Length: 274
Image (cartoon, rainbow, N blue to C red; front, side, top):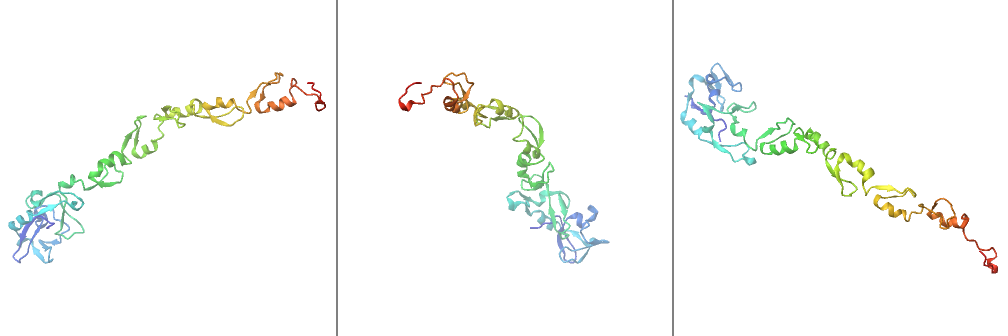
């Protein structure tokens, strides 16, 4: 398919072709610097022979053929189904909307960048937030809303405004966010209150026994005290000795308690005195 829609032309030497009118006839616009021309002479795009502007004439028949050619979006292989006729792109005699000459292309080869590319979902465009990302237009909404590091995001808990990049660091640390107790006690509160709860209020917090220094879950420590070997208890003989660690009571009764019952040293001989 022809990639240089424009005016059809012919000359007496048998040349016939289609070149944009503003390239072929500089009177219609500024001369295109990519076309080799000097003093009314330019080169034929095909055989590079010199052609005189004064001896080149419009060819309506060829122009009609060219303008009837079907064109497709440059992203057709990627899935874009847009198509149209060249003539529907024209905005003036011998001119086509959005035409431009690429510096590396031959003078006759033009690339069409018409209005469709302004809406084509497959056209690659830069992120409007200037985050350096370039992606297809159809992927842009998802990027801008969820992925762009420069998008603006408001925290739903503290209402502070962040860029997307800064918000990633704020997530999981917002002091106003409602969270569950890490000890799985079932309580839920703002993150800023969590440390105080875990330190002094949580029934599932760990706490050392005052007497034996072993750690227990807070709501079980009271039961532990009924068995704690270092828990202070009174002498069962009521001898008046201050509180005795539970595990030391047998030694106290045997060695220290002044009301303990003692057997006669001659018990082996039959004395039953106590």
